[in-house]
Length: 458
Image (cartoon, rainbow, N blue to C red; front, top):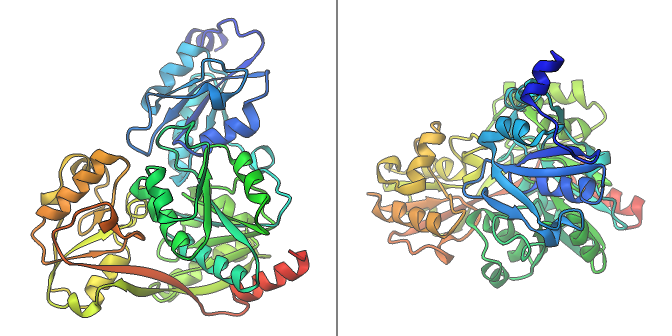
């Protein structure tokens, strides 16, 4: 066995450093490197790999961010070839560092790494969470699309009512120039233009900005935190992709989705955030069945019995246009991208609204899709009645625009959180739909946060 492993995984001279390969998606991977590996001479991070997001591989983690141990920077390679990379570079440790994946997927990667002779690491909070000098409220979720963003906005609203100066620090989405994106601050919509934000970034920032909340994001999250601490009373972590918080939370709120019961126990690392939460928000009560809601409550009782449960609805809201405009029309539905792609939801607020408000026909967008939008339907075969608002770069944004404009619809119903007319020239009238969190139970989030602020004297 020993000879077989050595044949697969020959050891180059490494000066005693353990050679590390980090599997990522331009977010958690960079954070784990920055806070754990960057300044430790006993490790050598040979490469990152990239997946989930298109066109983020075949670039470099730059030397300006990588530190003195990496004067040439670190290559970012496609994940598809990672078993060969283990052999080629004599990798000792493979670190899995992205999120919103099934347990089976997670351990498929792990089994491959182990078969190639490497250790397989999942990194927890003690190794990766940064401690703040200010109170941190972290809002996470068991899955993409559970309703975390509306929950974060509700928490921000309560904190402002209590007179607190707050900022939101958003889970990373650095898909461009990493040096320029090291620390990003957004106070206005114009800041999103200046930072060349993708549609996905805009979906997470715009509604916060519209509410007058400063948003931070970027690459180096310790630098981001130290910047935020100088000005704000409370730091609000707005998590993404059901990931763990990057900061040590003083209050940890996690959103569960009863429309996907069981996911809170079968997705990584959503199962971990579910089990570590101080507060579990059971969202979408108005859409779920009693059996689905009971399943979430049973999971909470079994795995996190000390958590406070908050029951809530996701209330549909017409943000622009008029619901009467939908009745009888041939409607193209545009939904939030990540929720419906790797979040695996076949619909969102847009389709719910189109049906509730009497659309005459829901147009199948697939015959009109072009380029990468067309390829997305091959990859995400569960999508049939909706168009995901994909826009990770200028080319994809233009392909989304073309897909919408050539669709044979009378009206576009869009439920992406942003006003897409800021970046697309759409040739059809549009109705924008959103969600707002409406708590039903007691204590509600206002009660919980008011008590937290009082106890912390925040």
